[in-house]
Length: 82
Picture 1 (spheres, rainbow, N blue to C red):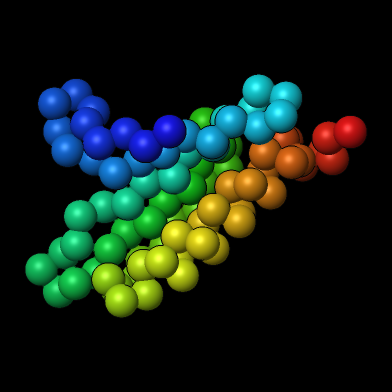
Picture 2 (picture 1 turned 180 degrees about the horizontal axis):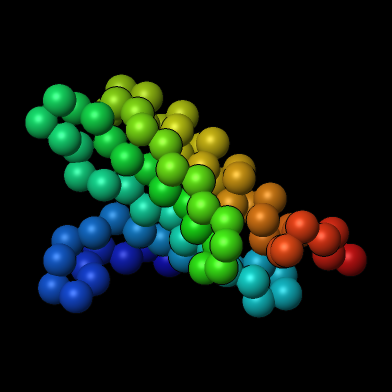
């Protein structure tokens, strides 16, 4: 699910839900004046990954963050789900 607003502010964030109800969130920051974009992945608990990229490499960076978040959903807390 893509969210475009949070507390009245424009955002780009989406929620991933795993097979057993575990969740992860990915979001991107607006581009800075120099063209850098922050990409973030969070598992709503203790794991978080932050990346900085440029607009031209954004798709690749999002793919990387998605892969990390999906890995968390397959193994919440570091354990392999059956």
